[in-house]
Amino acid sequence: MPPLQKPRRERLRYDAVLKDLFQRDHPTLLTQLIGLDPRSSGIGVKQTLNVELAIIEERRADLLFELEDGSLFLLDIQSTNDSAMGYRVGIYTLLGSQKYKRKVRAVVLYTGMERMRMQGHLDAGSAKVDYELVDIRDISAETLLRGGPGDWALALLAKGGPERMHEIILKAMKLKSPKRERLLTQLSVLAGLRRLDKTIRMEMEQMSEYVDIQKNVILRDIWRDGLAKGKAEGKAEGKAEGAIAILSGQMEEKFGPLPSWVAARLRKATPTQTQLWSRKVLTAATLEAVVGRK
Image 1 (cartoon, one colour):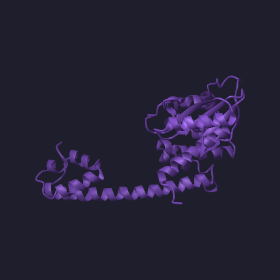
Image 2 (cartoon, one colour; image 1 turned 60 degrees about the vertical axis):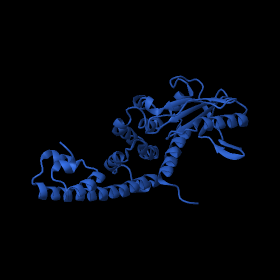
Image 3 (cartoon, rainbow, N blue to C red; image 1 turned 180 degrees about the horizontal axis):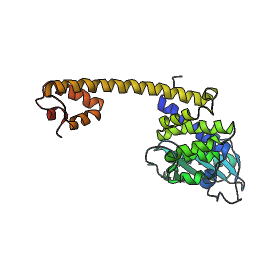
Image 4 (cartoon, rainbow, N blue to C red; image 1 turned 90 degrees about the vertical axis):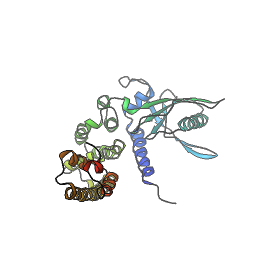
C-alpha cells in the first residue's frame, strides 16, 4: 500500500484526536451540540455506539451516541469542506437508523481554517437530508474554557482561541499526569488546524522543565516534525536572502546607493520577483525599470 500523502495524513491525525476527545472526554460542547443545557441535569450521553455500518461496502460514521432517553445523535467532524457532505450524512443516518431501529439526529461540526462553504441539507429527489452545520469559530473560546480539559482543547479552535493559547496551556499545566500530557498532546495536534505549530512549539519549549517531551510518543513526533520543518524553512529563507543580497549588489554597482523605497521593496520581494528582477537589472536603464515605479 503506498504511503498517505502529507495533507491526508495530517487530516487523519486531526480527525483521530477530535473523535477520541469527544468519545472519551464528553466535553460540554457535545452537550451543547446535542441541544441540551450544559448547566442542567437533563438527558445526557448514555454510551457511544458501534459505528461500523456495513452494507455492500464498509461505512464508518464519525461518532454515534445513544442518549439517556434512547434517541441517537450522530456527530460528524469535518476539518475540510466536503461537497458530498449531504450524501455522507444521509448514508450514516439511514444505516444507523436501520441498525438500531431508531431515529437519528445529525450535526456536522466544522473545525477547518477556510471559510465553511458546506450546505446543511440535501435534496436528492425522493430522499431529502437535513442536518445542522456548526462552525466551531462561531462558539466563544471563553465559554469553552469554563468546561473541562476536553473543552479547553476545543477552545483553541473556537472564536478567540488562538489569542488565548498561553492561558489554555497554563490551565493544562495545573492538571496532574496523565491528564496533563493528554491535553498537551491534543493541543499540539489541533494547533495545526490554525497554523499555530510554531507558536505552540515555542510555548512547549518554555514548559520543557515540567513535561518530558521525549517520553510522550506523539509530542516527540510533533516536536521532531517541527524541527525538521524549521530547518527546511531556514534553508529556504537563507537561500532567498542570499539571492536578494546578490541582486542588491548588482543594482548598487549599476545605479549607485539604493534609495530607501527600493531597499524596502527588496526586503519584501518574493523568490519569483527576485528572479525576475535579477534578469531585468542586466538591461534596465533605471531602478524603476527593474522593480517598478515608487
